[in-house]
Image 1 (cartoon, rainbow, N blue to C red):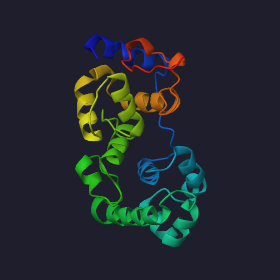
Image 2: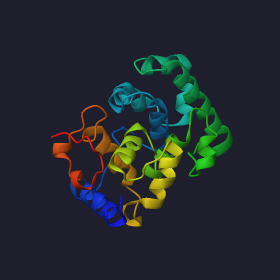
Image 3: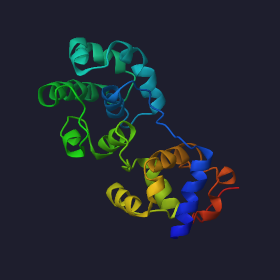
Length: 210
């Protein structure tokens, strides 16, 4: 996609949604971190449903440890891979207390050393809580980037790097949210809503729907 088209692409997404927000519900950096860890291979709606009651009583690592593994499992048992995720949440809470004075670090490498935290999760936390212009490439962003020709790549790391190079600075902070939401609600995997797409004319997808 040409440079001027990329600018227009994001300018239109911004016009439709000037201040995009994560669909995950959270109250502070810690609860967002937990929510993103739980969201792996799960829907945001499902995570929000499971954490609604949880986050009313737990919003710090100490409270999570006080709750305990078994009770945490009960809260999140409707989420896929809940056993593994529960263990990771307990373990990362212990690590935050022991190594970070219970504070979620603002550093990607430090975040990725926490149990259950990969690059995508770290990027989400850095972007949403700490306003860093990261690109948390999930399946939606990967699809949109390749399908539209915005920033094609063979894997998520390649797409992330290509997006960081391609996205104009003024759009960098919210770019990943615009792309996620566009992929989730318009540029869907099986039946993209090309007829409703605001960037249809800028997209290189050859099999556009009506």
